[in-house]
Length: 475
Image (cartoon, rainbow, N blue to C red; front, side, top):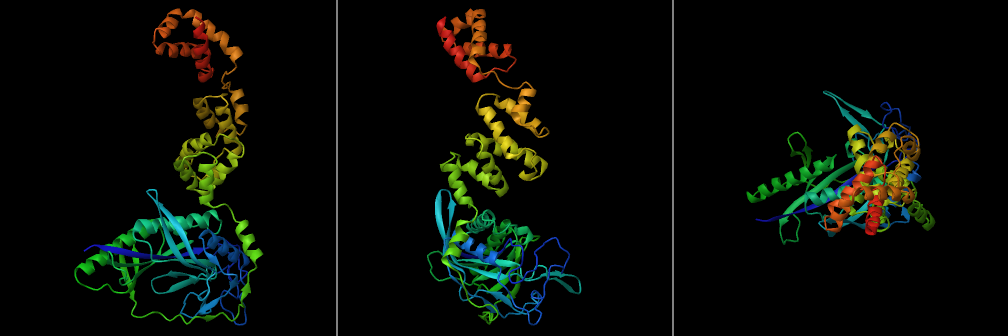
């Protein structure tokens, strides 16, 4: 029997804001436990929530990037479900009217584009962090109230690979839009997977199983692959798939049952009485979108269409936001974008990998790399000299042209200097001239080599080749 997987994702994105979703508590992941907590965070009687403006702006930016309809009215609801990690006993979220709805994202695979629908994007607050010990649990309320956006896809993904690409695309958006750092390993982006199987050609969905709190894209792929195989084996044996919540165990590479879903949980939503409806003006929404940082997709298009980079080079640079920002700064000071990309993806990337640092720790600032590229493209130094100069620049903070002059590295490209040298070499090698005229092309290379030898490698090879080709015609 041939089964088809039906997969939907729920992504929780922790946003980069200075304060929490509904209080003025500062957000700090390095702070000691329970030191970034206000009376609002611990549900002290008589306290009132206050909506974080930047969190709303971030939600608008993300919704726009996901091609969503943006609600101009901000509605919040209470989710009255038992939360041992929220002191007030309920979560403030958006159930009835999410800020973003009916969006989509396009995934590219082997030059084919597939559009995945996104049902909703809503704002809510994070829970406290629980630290389980042998006989007790400790709760750190520093995390309670951190602004989240939840993004819920339609069940239109059909494989682990598609699911991983979807998460990568979402992470790229929130990172480049400066909404979140997108670090799954630190909990900034968490994923729940809903998966069922059905026979190919069927319209009706199978029994859905949820896999909770996956903390890496790789684990999402492994969990889905395992669950597809597990459910397929059940169905082939004639057994029903049980509706349940499972978790993924990285050690055993298997999903493990947590609890059955015998009936839908009643979250007892009702409108949040302490937060009135907030009207978002067209100007507010437009300003949020227009002032947002450039997305990775727009950068990619700009790199390829305007700067002439290959898709491969553009994607390598865009793998890291800091690298892309570095490239953008350097590109302001040179027009040789392809050469700049080659250096970014060559010597620069090699240095970063070797020293296990990000580009902000590179001793060479964007302006100096652009200057190095300009020296090479103008013919003042060769590519080999450029690589040597790059190594020197890691220690020497001066402008590369100053260093090249001090180290006597500048190439000779002046024809008034090179022509007399070429004529001298030609007069001294009449047999090579005859060989070249007789069809032996290697003779030209020999003559160029003699000029390079006489100048101790400082002559510009391209210029020398051109001069030799022109001067030899006179003999």
